[in-house]
Image 1 (cartoon, rainbow, N blue to C red):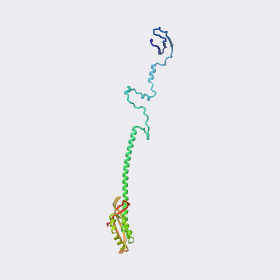
Image 2 (tube, one colour):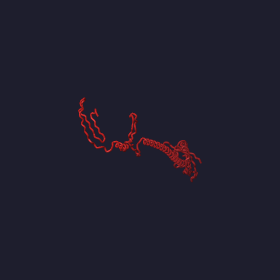
Image 3 (cartoon, rainbow, N blue to C red):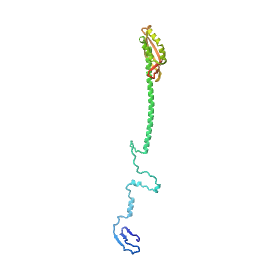
Image 4 (cartoon, helix red, strand yellow):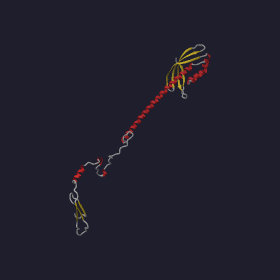
Length: 263
């Protein structure tokens, strides 16, 4: 091999020949060549078999082998998904915090909010209805109690306490009834004193005809024993009195606006 400054040839199972050319000058005579011959041990098996065996052996890390991807022009390569994404952080329920789980969580939260709002609205309606019914029932009972007391006051008059008795009737009245009774109060007082009237009434029954939290109509059955100059031992009397009442806005008391005997 001429024209090559240095050459090393290693033939298989043969001598290694080392040729070194030194001191060559252009146009000069060819220097003598020194030949070095060394014997090396032969390989255990041909190189072709070694390559075939390596091709047949499995890759040590199958995961890394699966990650290999043959691509062409780098400009044509699209972003490939990460084959080893980091595990998502688990949420409070122990599930991975992924976009899907977050979406389900938001949907569940929205559903719970809607259900809670509906429950609160229903509870509010039921609560308001219960409050109205309860307040109306209490108002009716109070109206009946006021009507019972007004009926007893009206038929319970005595010559010995006439001023106090008439004032009690006036205090429980309002509107037209109070005006009428006040105008005739002097005549009533004179008749009670002159006839030495002593009357005491007792409520037998009382029931509400109609009413709400502001107005009521109540029917009261009253028995009374009336004594006067003509009946010193007393005589029984039975009355059915209908009373119309209104609830005073300031005091909350039920006051009689109309009183009439109905039987």
